[in-house]
Structure formats: C-alpha cells, structure tokens
Length: 188
Image (tube, rainbow, N blue to C red; front, side, top):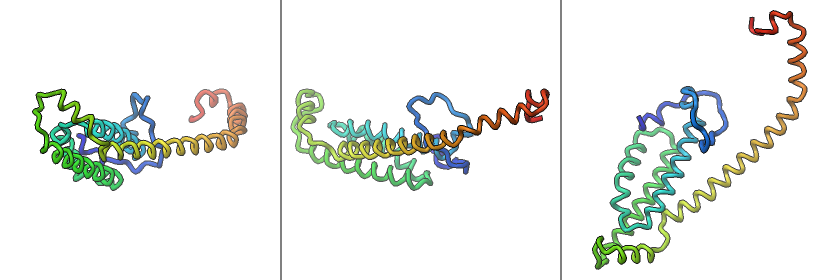
C-alpha cells in the first residue's frame, strides 16, 4: 500500500535521481531503489504543495485541507526516512497556520457561503498565504538545485565520453581475434 513506500528501499548501488516527467514504466527492482523513491517523493511533494498553496487562498481551506492533514500525519508516523518526515512536518505546520488564520478571519464575516459574490470578493482581498510564499520559495530552490545537478551530470558525461573513445576499438579487436563460433555468443 501507500504506507509501505518508506519501508521497502533496496540497498542497491547509488543511481542518479529519476526525472519522472516522461517515465511510463520502470522495472520492479528499480521501484525499490532510493533514487526512484526520492524522485517519486519529490514530484509528489511538489504537486501536493502546489495544490495546497492554491487552495490556501480559498475560504474553504480549513475543511478541504483536513483529510490531507490526516493522511499526511498517518504517513509521517509510518515513514522512517528523515528527509521525508521533516519536509512533511514543515508542510503540516504551514497548513495548520493557514487554517488557523483563515478560521480567525472567517469568524468576523457577515455573509453566508451561498453569497458567491461576497465570498469571491473576500478571497480576492486575502493577502498571500504562508503556504503560497513557502511554495514559491521551495520551487525556486528546488529548480535551481535540479538545474545544478543536471549541469554537473552533463559535465561528468562529457569527461566520461572523452575517456571511452578508445575502449570500443579494443572490444572490436578482441572479438575479431576470437574463433568464429565464439563471436556469435561471447559468453560460451
């Protein structure tokens, strides 16, 4: 299930983080690697944070965010990964702060939820929430880190490509020296 996510990491050798924007399928073994789970968590966290920050400008945020808060607390209790739990704890604190602020502001309202014009006007007068500020800051930092990692990987690949130039020629020469039967299936 969803709560088994943090408990099933393979101790496989470190692999580079996964960019899940175009991935359709991965192997069963790769699903349990730290790199894959970090990629899934980062993408899920970004999408959840984006969604919640947009909801935080709504008069109904305290009620709408309640089931999300319950699930995140449950996930946080079961999760053993300190990176995940610290990020989720920070998100939960921001959600609770925004819920409290909106509840306090709503207590002084004189209109009913049926009065959509008044609700829309009230929501438009809200200042930027702590969640929206947090999301904007988090996304800037996250994207700059991702860009730095990608440029470092590209530099590493360029250096590796220069070193491997002669390695293909030696493999071809080795296979030519093998008897004809061995060339078809070099493992035998």
